[in-house]
Image (cartoon, rainbow, N blue to C red; front, side, top):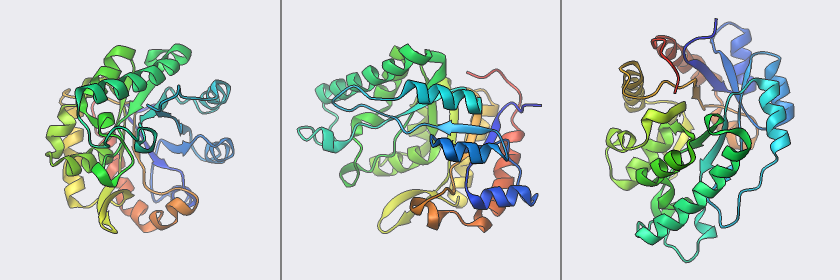
Length: 279
């Protein structure tokens, strides 16, 4: 039986080994859009494909619709995601932290243009947009991408759904000097289709995600589950623990002991959610 909300973990050899050893439970693996890795993960569990698409550049977003369709069909992934991710390097004439109305309008229009390309091909009910992490002048993402009014405009004008990355929101709230829950509450949470979470810690002088959850993260995660259970947020089809992975980027963030310790609590919380209609 398919649960009301499915629980996923980033595919990693460590997570796969723990699964086969019976030390963790999950409904599916979350994988990048790499056909070979998707095929490998499918040998153990269903797969939720996460696409490496980035909306908001100066030129229309390029993507391979045939590849996307093949991966959707192979994995039964119901959504096509894109990141709201206008890069500072692409807008040298706009300060990265600008909230000038003209700048918000220009970048918002670029985001909408790209999301509409996906909507036109796949339909609004299959497209979701992910909030990016923002680190002010220390980062690469334009502030316009993380302004709740801009994100809401993208969602409302295109008809798509929201992929709420809690860890990204926590990082963004930190650099904006805003309280975590207040910032998240300003996002279009009534349109949530998918949620991602990891721990957030200070590493080398800046906030980083894809780490183990610490106690403050657990408190906020439990609050998020409470928002879903109470109906204050739409119920996602999937909640993914984005810890672990393959390749050099994740070598230092794929510890089996972390997965073994934290996945059961996450799985239990997700599977305790009441059955309600998805957004």
